[in-house]
Length: 364
Image (cartoon, rainbow, N blue to C red; front, side):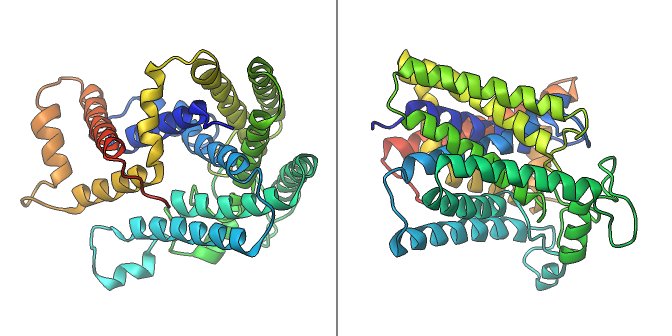
């Protein structure tokens, strides 16, 4: 089976979106669609991380479709998972007081790459050992169990769990109890421990989409199946959201279904454009996809270095660049902030292109 350009395009778009929303000129002035929902709800930014996990699932289905469980295969999966977790922890080390050791007392343990590593590990093992029907059963079991546990089991302090704040719910209670000071915020972490379980489901749904792409059907049939899969997930998700709010931090079941549905819809579109109609222009985005994790990792490390490195008493590299080249020329701060983010995206697009042309690919 030839390499699917649609998957590379979708991965490239997702990485570009990640870099865009993570690098505004100033966090105090950002257009609302480029921010996460404060609690319940869904913005375009909330789609990005589940999209990437969904794509991880697709990649697992394509990469391991002819693999059988073996010691060598498990070893590769474990090594890759450890690399992802290690890179994520390395990003978290960069704090305002870096490299002083006392920062380890409050070092954030969870993170985006850490979650990707865990999700990849679990999902790969399940894919190698279960049929598609069994994976669908696991998806159903995990979503229902997570809903019942987080929605109806009393907390140890006797409080009834609630989805209405970040205090009285199991996801944040477990994170605070186990991680303590090693969280993103004092009361919650968007990549916490318990919410990693439903994020695995996001990846498993991606595996099902990947299996659709490997079926011996016509290309149009596959595209139609992906579209039907998308509409089904989105519909189920919005119906469930009546009782189970859409929430990224807790990674609720409705959030899982809706975001996976939009990801499947995006895949059906890129599959139609790239692999059916073979429109060349869109394939330029695959440059980013070839070094997706590397580009994301570099963008996070460089951004943190720019935030913590001072060039004088009042400015860091980041603030100086923003004020000098953007904020001083535009009356609308949100526009200046967006243009800064777009310039960062442009830099990494150029870097991706150079790496691609020089045939340099970093395997993580």
